[in-house]
Length: 454
Image 1 (cartoon, rainbow, N blue to C red):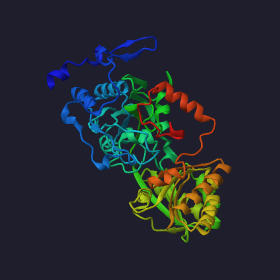
Image 2: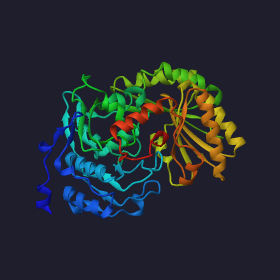
Image 3: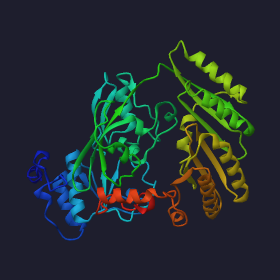
């Protein structure tokens, strides 16, 4: 087996061919019969070693679609070779990191192979003086943060399940949290990326310094693409210092004071790094904010924020120790639907009123975690799932009227036949389809997972 693996071409032997400059090799040029799982396994055994190709278990299914094999490449070159083979053989491939969000998006039309980035788990470079770091896609967010913390730095991001979620996974799903208020989104933090394209090309864009604007903005294109354009193998981020001191403040507020609270928060946005409002039917809205500062300045910051919020109608309460993990609890294993809402921040009072009306007209129960940046997570429960479907259709219409949107993140598989999990992409769908056709003309990667069945 080792001898067979050494016979494969090295990355230096992969030369651009043709007018488009794609990287190929004679090893991959032979066209074989239509996809055959057993024959394909023999080929990928030669690339990654048979010990890194596994028989899947039921838990490896992607929204009910079961793959034939799980393959775990060791590096970018092996990933590119597996993709090139799959592309030629007609295999349908799903990239997987920690697997925390594989139930987001549409069910794939097919999934012959799960390509795991589990073994790509290193921090490649940490240029502390430049406040940048390059990390492999399979590294968990928590592990990455621990490495950065040794130099007093961090990736200023708070995605879901950081102990299991990988860098590649959060980029592919565009997952971030309340820290976006102060530090921006993934699109603001990512400055370079390396991806493996379906034909085996390894493409790099961006760089390892913050002020790098040369070339096409491939990093931003890949964020939130759900693995439909390429497999992320490495990413470079701008970093921020660890906070000297952090303090959380919490407030209760009446519904009629919500708009005033939001206005006060907007005026205090330079003093806080995160803010979220928890709302539910028959519950008092509860606000939690986070303040970061030097030890000698944090009390003054907190006092200014507290004074503004109290004047707006907020009542101070003890800050819950688990406030920032509330987003994860929305995804517990009990039956229910979790949606992502995007809306203008000042429209949250309208959303609250609409949800109250829906809970009455459709007999649903709901919880909403709204962020000052205009993104929220909504959980819906009902005894009859048809009530949830009707409520979401109505909610989507109301949000569209406000210029917002609703994306279903988690729901029973049979519900997807009644409701598109993605919002209407409008005129943008034509551009999305052209991008897919350019990057992945054979629809090798995650077919059907994205907007419009892309």
